[in-house]
Length: 552
Image (cartoon, rainbow, N blue to C red; front, side, top):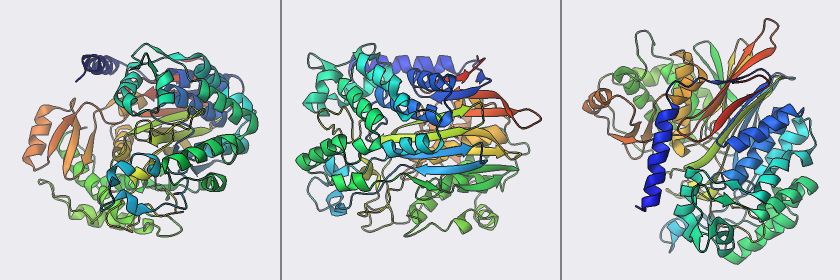
């Protein structure tokens, strides 16, 4: 390993170990923002303090994350957004995952096609990017401020540059050789990738944001940016076409929810595949928490068995709600949970049996949460797929295009999660809102690919079952099932616990971290008005939670 990269990794581990000691949640009286980058958090707070609401601030946060986490999310990406509208007192799911291009041929992603694995990464893996339409839906339907004013921070930071943090610099170094030459010109210097502390300036991206701010999403979905994307796809052999962009729509859906120990837990409905997170919570609710310690052998064995079953459910039942909807009435029922848990062994790990479907993990994603003084909430997960997505950047745009189709499930051919031309893309993001006494209590979420739907339930249980504050619930050590039949355990989990679980038959390996979560919590006065906000940024990352108004 390159010595400089090793130093960056060691520094990141040191920062993480320091951040988890004695940290309290951020506090605010007029709102809260938590994101994976301090500059993005500041952009959101600036909007809140200028009279904007959570929906306005969410657009500003998302656009700045595009600039300062270019490997993670942006205009060329997609995602899953859960909102709470304080005026209507309702939760809605906004899907920005888009549809699979109309001309896709899924056979190029599997044998016997030559270079089928390469096709999963490059231009053929680009799917319709839905983020810009979703940002506009938030702004036009719920925002207080003018659309054009929401991108000031993103334009300024991309135009004038920002100092790279260690993690982003590391991703640039890993990916640099695969960048097109026009991207290498500003992601590098003298032919070498930028390093931690260097200034990244993205003038093309700044110009794209100016165009979007002035002309609206039409400039992206059919206008000059859309045409640049279309031309790049034509030149590189991608399936995405101008017609796919023109036909893209941000779609509003009703969320799904279950009761968990007296609270209502909401997440995204299909076409999202977040429903296994609720299956996990439902199954765990069948067990008593009396006398069970956090991350004890008993607790982790239960969750390991539960999370494997929910993973199986995702592979078996995920689907487009208008074509092959998952049987949620069964999967989210107490009768089903009792039946499944009644068959689970209390002292032996079961072997994971595949339902003849194999999936691929996606890792490079970001999550953020925003709440305003009126009690509106946005909990959003956005991604490019892999780091820097497809590594395709239409010249002159500064925009990385996703490789969303890489995360379809290609075997067996024709399965529900295959790359079906024109069908909705099934995203595994899991933004979550917990309701308590009829009001939003917590908004939370994380990146992490197929670990997302396992990390979120653990954080919910930390809050509900173990009475942790929002920071401790996010910082606490985690586990995750990993194919084909193993568990990733964060290295901070007690070794004696790991040894005993290994003795029960669980295949375990240690990892440095799982996810990079963000969350917030709200307190109300006797009239039901929000009066105090608490927020937390995961110590595993380099993000920031900060409150609006008087804060800590």
